[in-house]
Length: 213
Picture 1: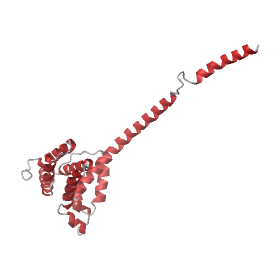
Picture 2: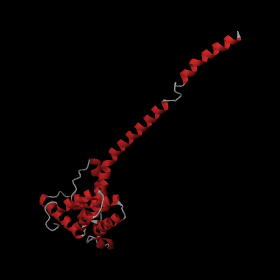
Picture 3: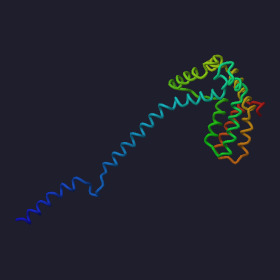
Picture 4: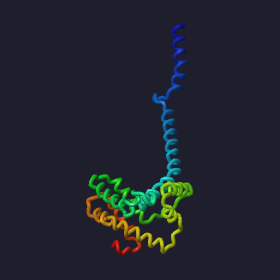
């Protein structure tokens, strides 16, 4: 009787063992859980990107305003304001872009060139949340220069916009932007630098600016 009892017990345990673990010995539920976590994380990043994108655009536009008129950040008789009144900041920025090329810091050089191009003309249309942040930052940074702040808020007529475009192009040309473009054209830079320099050249010549030509 003992042998037959051991046999029946082993037979009874076999189905329970095979039902607990997969045939290949691997627990596939872990893969399902990992996939669920990754999908959830990707969805979170996507939603965050959509939320932050208009805010980032607004902040970048403020950076361009600061580069365009750094003197407006300071009160009228402030020493720093006097230093920035004659384009010294933009000139140093352009010189720094040239230096970055010698240091093979391509990404930062591209950002500077993009900012210079945005100074000439920016067609960015802001969503409500981005526009709200932009106005808030404008008031924060340019509160010492109400005249400049007012000029940003005011709607610009077409003739005034053309004149403002020409003045900005001439100022960038005076501070060395055109020389920067020429140096980039003749240098052995990457295709990304070459493309951005072409975009900057187009911005400087937009509207048929004969002085820059």
